[in-house]
Image (cartoon, rainbow, N blue to C red):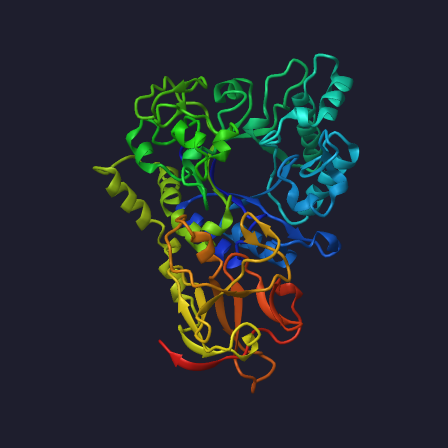
Length: 537
């Protein structure tokens, strides 16, 4: 256990893009080796009796049990997170009767109608279903960003409800806090402790968040860290200095800044990354959250932080911290955002530095190196499990030229199958000179998550670095390949399973088309027949 923190770990958002079970197991093993003890997991479980909710991505009940067993064996507590009342589109897209309507009568499937008893009961049913599997003492309800890209004025019924409940002086935020407290009461009735993100906490004359709620602090908005701690709440620091995003370049572990600052162990709180205001005004990619007020800006372009009082200061390296706040834990976070900009394996590789840092802090480590480059190398050395080359050692398929007769509806072949830098594969139809790609269908965060979406042939996209222009198009052309053989048919020929790298469904031939389907929905013979034309082994 950390000498400084009771809790150290990772927040993983896996409810809008699938991370395969084997990927999660690698993360858990690396966390265990580093001494990290907590994974906050946002994911969707496929419940057999909720067929209308079987939207991708999801984890089957068997898969989630495998993950939780592995975590338990490694001493890692897995905290379930279902965000509410915002960011609920995973569930509300198939249950719009529980979604709130805006002032124009349009149903907002991203936000729960939390001022209705039906909406509250729906969320509580989700809690009960998840607690059948999760044994963590905590339940995380998120409670962040309800007014992201919108305002409470877009939902006038919330103000009307608050004033009817608390009087004329009430504000819409009071109804929001009441909802948090309702869920807290329900969670406590199930023997759990509630956690929330900090930006749902506001000053109010009529109501406050229950004092036994744990606050995960991530954004300089609303009450300051000092005010929250002084009010008696337990606080965990989940700083944006330790956010990783698949697409947003200003997120990422700014290790050199941390190394040079007095705040090496991050017991103080940052206000988010700094982006020059002219970039925001120009609408450059990745700055929309800033334009919406999602992150504090510092117009001089320096790294903005807030001191122990919540007051912005110019630079983390020159800030004075009169005393350390009693932080209960420290956690990094992995977010998808535009999820096609990285594959899951690239996410793990990029997380090496921040996870290595966390492990070093858990061990009570200081800055014993001469400079940041030496420190970074040491952190990388401690996270060797996450190196991209490790995926190559588990590959069961050799690059080369293959005949794939069941793909003739797409291309006559033969197919040049080439391994990518993250040990996925691209398929080039040598007859047409085009590549296999999954780019058409219902998309979510840039990933085609539609069950039954068909692959097609597209123009060749050359390899590009992470987050570079056309990285998304390149990743749409990556596939996992695995050789399988029917164990019940000794004389059967081996076949290959092909899965889009961004979705981790499996390609099957259906009604003359090659489409993606979840593995648990596939019946009959798995994979595709193949013959070697020319192997590059």
